[in-house]
Image (cartoon, rainbow, N blue to C red; front, side, top):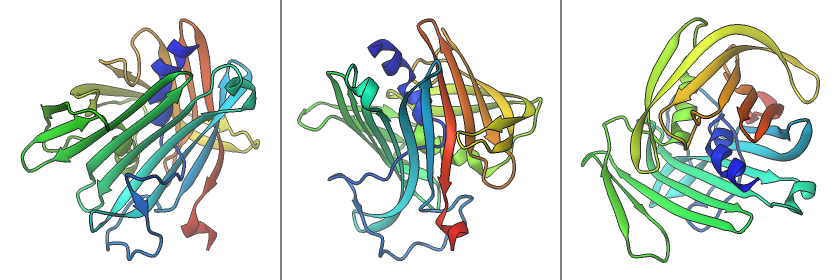
Length: 266
């Protein structure tokens, strides 16, 4: 089970999801005056998904956004959290947190933080981006080694990239090509769109969504040894409504449960 969770961790976070969690790296400050930028989603939005291992519910994923005070600047935080439920946690607990701090004007990442807790496995990595110099630096707290590598002018980590993708609606019957940063390298990502289908959410609502199949040349996102299908809602929100991933050891489903949007709730 550990290998499957490690394999699909980025799959789960790379689906426009995840939770409001604040920790020492970034301080959330709700009283901040947000910059005057026109984003294609509501800051403060919270999207919740149920995760199924076959037909068995095993956990929850939540995606959220907030304004944060980061080194004296008001920036955007995109957070992804995935947790197993009580049943699976007794066998193999998972509590993964991914956070991107983004410049809202350029929608380029300033810092990417990954904190994984999967069984006995632990990972804490922080990547800082310097787009002017064209470099990124990845470090692990408590260790002296810093890994530096070149980035492209529009390089985005996977969390930032997934929200960036929501800006424009895709059309069926197309193949879209992107470049994305993962594991200290830049990779090609291809998204093949197919047709519109009605997706049934956890609460029984049916949402018209575009079926698509992503492929990538690296194992951190969509492994080549398995197959994956995504459904993304039509219209202005463009959120993931369903994901099905099949790998040699399991079948994972992620189904939309709830969307909290402060702009629409007012």
